[in-house]
Length: 627
Image 1 (cartoon, rainbow, N blue to C red):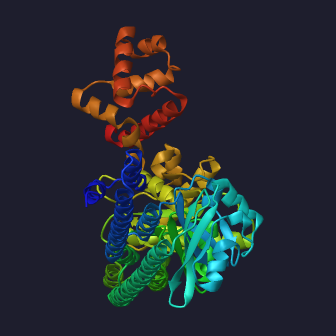
Image 2: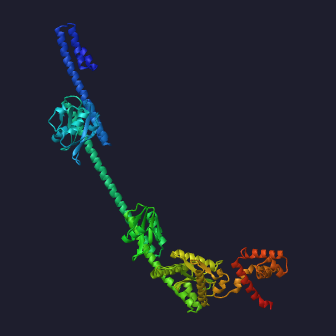
Image 3: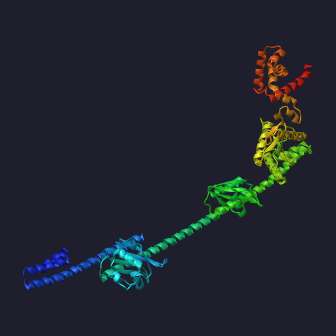
């Protein structure tokens, strides 16, 4: 009866199995009676059995707790890798093994690979890929049953391979237990527990590892289902987005059609098309006469918009003729629907350009016919001339200038020359339209009748016209201008006279090597008297020495008489003072006054010649008055 307290104390403090031998050994050392020793032996056996039962219960409790925690992890599955890692960690801890690992089959490659390891130290082992049916795992997969070996390298019941054996040897494994991961009747992998020493795995441990394998299979199945569900949801979302996108595309295409149709019906301009498409595509669309040659030619040939860098180019063409391009700037990403929108806009633009060209050509013909009638003086009814001009927004009662324009330089051949003349006539017609004037092709060149703006001279108009036409046709254009003409409705013959004068100025410019320039008769000094249709002597005298004449008239001075004497004496101040009977300083003062009135260059040869001619013409004009 005194043996139980000692063993109860050992049970209470969880002593090791070896400690249960101490009471028996102590009784023998003290020479206790055989009955006492036998009682202690019985008490020891009973206490060890109780101890084993308690340890089994604690172990099952730990196992159940681990299984519960794993099931809880599985219920809240967020990351399948984390759940599998926890399963392997708990299996290794509960079974007390050096290593635990899990492999999965790869149907795509026809082999199996390490998915999770715990306790492994060998890199080659962690990266093993095994052929189906090889190694201990292959035997487990074939039989769909657990398999255990207490000495891996001595076990010949499964297929050894150099790769597997090398990995196992690197890891130093000896005893290995493997249980299948099952999804229905199919083995999808194997869960292993292994030691680096010989060991016999008990039935309870095999069952426990099987339970973890079932949870691992459930985790993988749940993850697969979640993946499939997410994939299906993503597919549904994509389908929904596609439906929304297609719906938006249809609405946008309808909007594009309506807006472009409205532009055509109300006679919109090219810039209106570009603005509308810019708004629709959310970018900047411009119409360009020219663009990248290769991309533009590709677009014209293939009939579609093509990408050029970050831009898109759609050729605007009609009947094989290239009219320009619509360019979408800085918009590299363009879906097919937007691309077709740009192409449709290019087609509408070509229609607008053709319509505008037809209207412009009709108007140009009408303008040319009116100017031809004025040049040929065929229609002398002022009212009819005014009415015809008014329909073209021209005013024949305003002051105009007649300009003769001709291309400068030879052409390569007759065909090129004809094409260049057509371009010149087209450019002149556009200029006449914008300036509310008239234009016609004549004598291998072009004649224009343009109104003179307030403060503008014939020279300024001629030079600006030469520059504008040259820019338009990309070749030098020479322009000769008449003096301002008026009363065109009542005196249509003045147009023909003005054209003749403009042609003479044009010829003079070419003779003087000033091709590509513009000028009027007034720009040629005394030569202008020869070029002008009407010899306007008074205007020449006024332009040349008018300030001196006016000064003498106001002040009663003798600057004109001094100039006459100065030139008559060979431009010598000393001889001039003798001719005038004045002091040489007086001559110098008078000549200084002349310089201030006429400019410091008045004694240059060209200016001096014009001044002498003007002095003679002035004397001739004043002679009758003296008489």
